[in-house]
Image 1 (cartoon, rainbow, N blue to C red):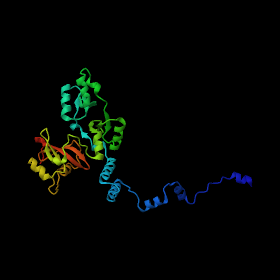
Image 2 (tube, rainbow, N blue to C red; image 1 turned 135 degrees about the vertical axis):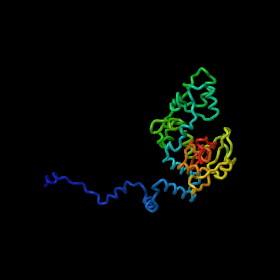
Image 3 (cartoon, one colour; image 1 turned 135 degrees about the horizontal axis):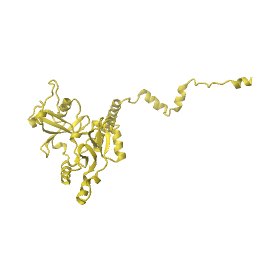
Length: 303
């Protein structure tokens, strides 16, 4: 009899209530599970944003916190291509240009960092900090090439949150963007990414908004707020500004330009309407905040 039991393999007895084992591993309290069953959490970004709005209504968070959290959530699905400055609008330095010309360009554009190219604008060899040019003035024997720093190259489809992490790790403040074919698509800065969270970061050279939504710039162009009424822009420039579809009506110039383009214009992009060229200076929160407006060239004029 003993040998009979020894020769038999005894199968493990299955738990008649497998859910109990899972419950043992669940560290949530009974009250937490009950609350989640009655009021489950959000399952999508839109639901989470709606939850934030409800939290603001209940005074759990203030309006500024809600806006910033929403921007963080939206940035999670944005890519570098949504924010970049297009190639044709990049201010770049030619490594072979005379020092005087480089200094003039740096002063005129007022940037702190510049992509440097050699031979052609599609051959970027590095990044030059404006402050490093001062070293050449003090020590003319230095070679400009020794001051050029390695450039950070990133793909156009890279997520903004990933780029932000890379900026922090590499301590870079500017990246050159490459498209799917390996060509230069534009550039993006650390400030461009941060602005997607905190809004536009203005410096001491930016004009306060209360000084007007249409005003002249030093280069004979105009700066126009995206929420300026279309009628005011048309009157200021003596232009006819209307949608290509006569049944469509818009109140702001930003809304009209975005509709005509079929999407939100990116920073640095231009669109010609009513004999005027609208170049996006700043775009955030799903709308254009500032345009640079100049007369359109003859062949580019529309409407």
